[in-house]
Length: 189
Image 1: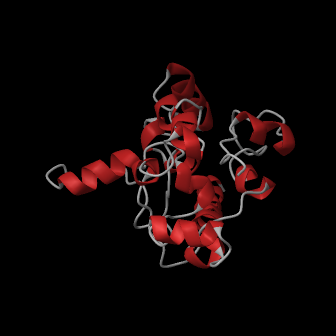
Image 2: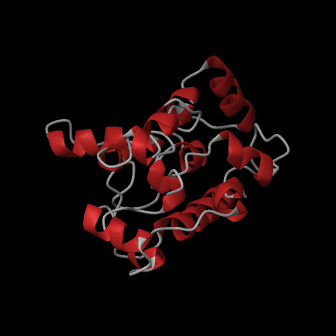
C-alpha cells in the first residue's frame, strides 16, 4: 500500500509540476538572473530566505529521521522517494532532482544542487521553455500564454499536492493565508 501511495504521489506531482511534457527543469539559479533585482520584486531573494528553499535540508534533521523511522522508511529521509516527492524540484522527472548523479559530471552536479529543495519550478512548472527574457516579456505583455510554455498558474491545488493530510507533518492548510507567507509578486507598474 505504501509503495502504491508513493507511486501515486510521484505521478500526480509529475503531472501537476511538469507543465508542457517537453519542458525540462533548469533550477532556480536560472530564475535568479531576472528575478533578483528590487525593481522587479526580488523574487529570488524572497524565495531563498523562505522555507521552501531549504526543504531538502529539513530531511536531514533528527526530527525527520524519527518521522521516517516511524513510517517504516528504511533509508535516510533525504534519499527516500516518499519524502523527496515534496522536498525537491522535479522528483520523478528525468530532468528533475536525482538522488545520485555522476560526481565527475560537473554540469549534472551543479544542476542537481540547483534542484535540491522546493524551487521556483516546483510551483511555476519546469522552466526550459519559458526561461528566456524574451519569452517572459511576451508572457507579461499577453502575447504568449505562459501555460503553452509550461508556466503554471498558481492555485490551491499547486500547494496541496504536498500540503495535505497524507503528509506526516501536516498542519491545517489555508491557501489564502499560506500563499501570502511565501508571496513574491512583481511590483505593479
